[in-house]
Image (cartoon, rainbow, N blue to C red):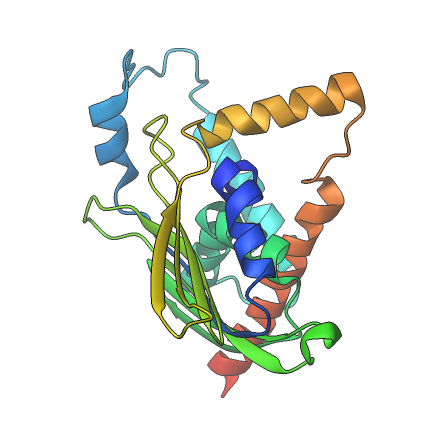
Length: 248
């Protein structure tokens, strides 16, 4: 969803492209309790309705999950910490990692991982394009869920003379603006700050329009299964570094 937001597609990527060499970047998603946003924004809420869910469905789901984790981590103990981390990365973490990849590409390696449920962080090593000098830079990934109902999700990129940040609000409240903030040094040495809003169109609406164009006009799909596999490849790198840490 975040990769289809007009402020990301039309504004943030353009501003990053004009920033030149990247010195550092940060990916954050402190989502807060989703229940708070949902409870206060839903129009027709249906809670606790389980009559159409078979009694054995819960146990079956847990059994399938256990089987899947055993396959994914063959030869390694599936501890509670490992299971919680896997579920976290595969849910909330996928939004941030996917967004990061579209802007910055794929990291060369993972330099560090911290797993303290329900908060996780990692240091990722990237390299600038050769056309920008090819110098390395680090990206901090930090994500977690606390009980403060403030949705703090953003991707910030720091260039030599320009800082760009796109900030997302809760997707459970339709139509909240997604803004891009730019701080830069002008050609006159002045400090210039701008805040840009490409559109009030909801990111989910923009994604549905894109999907419709793919079906009816043959437009190329951006978020393909092959693209999603890149998220899994990075998750695997994160777990490899995690395994190194717990063995040390």
